[in-house]
Every structure is written in C-alpha cells, then in structure tokens.
Length: 88
Image (cartoon, rainbow, N blue to C red; front, side):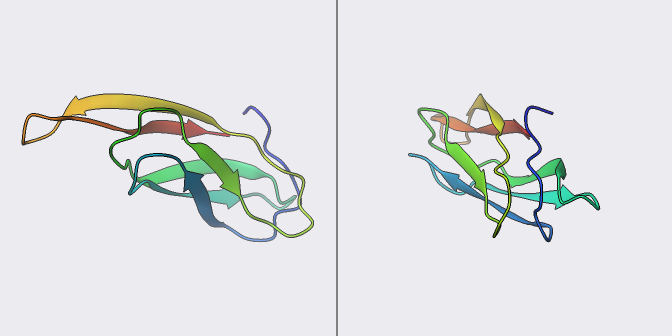
C-alpha cells in the first residue's frame, strides 16, 4: 500500500479523471477509515496517459494511488488503453 489515507467514513467510488473514458472503481475501508482495497469495475478506454485517481471524503487524510495502464486490441482492430490495476 502506497498511502492508504485515513478517516474515510464509508466505502465509495473513486473519481478517475483523464483523457480516456469509462473507467470505474471503488474502494473499501477498515475500521480506522483507511482504504484497504480497490476494485476496478470497468477498465475504461482511450487513455493516452495515466489518469488522476482520488477518493472523496470529508475530513479525511488523502490516500494516493498507483495506476497501471494496459494496452489491448479491440474488435475493430484499434488499440484500447484502459486501467489494468489500481492500487492504494
């Protein structure tokens, strides 16, 4: 874990901002409000650079995330770039 943050008050979706679209992930917390896991629900497409990932929380100490992008050919022969892994 890079930086799990603390004082998050509930499990929630992550905010993923970048030049691609469709990526969706959520995090889970422990009893201290630290993020303990991240689950990617949709890898998204068309990212040309690493997106910014944030966890929203009031009065929380910000967590930081590492993002690994993956390249794959889609059914039309174009290269799609999506989030392969997202770790806290």
